[in-house]
Length: 111
Image (cartoon, rainbow, N blue to C red):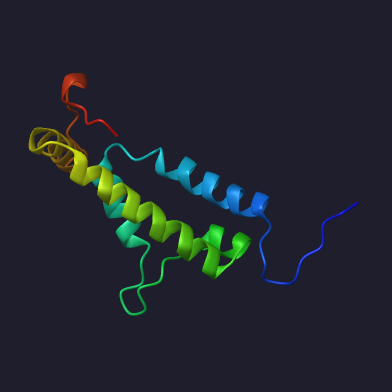
């Protein structure tokens, strides 16, 4: 028996797939700060809504906005839970990557 749904209503498995794909993309972030910068870049400054091209086309605007909003909040909360020393390491790592500087493994953040 196949499951039916109204147009625009996502089934739980589809929601899970959307969130999983987003998390997979975010795992490539080298640090929490890098992740925060990326998530912030996905938010429209005029509307406050989040979108990501492929995910938005595949899963719809509302679902992608919700998932990205939750992920941005959760990532920021993780950042705030770091000690100042850990935040400094994470930020130095992000700045180093942005400048093309390769840092020693012991100076990598806890992403």
